Length: 437
Image (cartoon, rainbow, N blue to C red; front, side, top):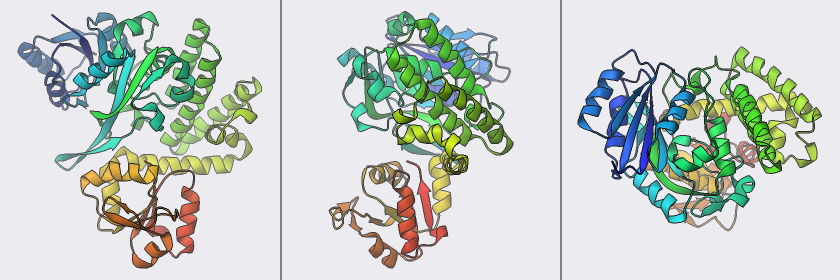
């Protein structure tokens, strides 16, 4: 078999979604693949479905393993892989038809240790599915060019995520011992994998292509499990020992501390009620120890890093207020477009901001038929110009002309000031929506 890509499919009791998943990988335009279905002791109809598809496609190899750990499945898949590159597919997700072809072309063209791309978040709306584009990296400087090893701290320290949108050179993973922690179940075990791939890649490439469909509203997903309060700290404890064992340098350690507390902040916002209170107490204690140990220095913390760290110790009330806002946005994002459309149903919408975040909002939602009443912006140079066929006006003009409309403010540095400005122009609280894009 001429195998250039090994696709690791993680499977456990997935009978409801497995057929859609397998159709997507067997139907790839790139054919020189092997498909390693890692079944972690499924007790439903999953084994029969796997046998059915394996009987139709000789590229499928079923590997039964009673170990249900997501990390174990990935690690064994890396060991078993015969392909030059490795891709990861989760059994409730789907690959776009040209995903492997596009990523393989990118990786080959520039000799990248890994190439990845953007994706679509998917949630069910009735009997159909709603897809919305997700930009994986916050900075445009990450896209469309080779990222060399020397820039790993500058651009990738806080960016690399979503391991399933990537293609990884098998020899690179094996040479650097890049694996996942094999903790029980499936709970954020890609932490060390993502970090080490970003830190040790000689070259990487990131594309804006939407190559993967990620299911957001699976109730069994780790992101929705409040019981896994300490899963993130355990992953960072594992990564900490990995870096110590590797005798990591300053760049890796600086990135580690930044990653850690961004993840803690995200975890606190993911949780609610007593679970959040418990975790924030832990967060505060561990943060204090890390500051006293000199791992975090107030003078070196930028605005975002300060909000994830020192703010908790210096103004806990403000910190918790920010966490709650993040939680509210996160709950909306769980069902991405479906929830947004439900919240805005029957409302005229005015977008406040036509810059990068505003354009990202339009890219994310306009494809679903979202109709805008108008767009406003504080920048005089933008006022009077046209975006998506709509003339941009000043906020005051929009407030006067679009009475009763819902003003949507993409989250960013000035979102709070923009909200205050609209209230001063007479827009009511119920007619304002800050939304993270």
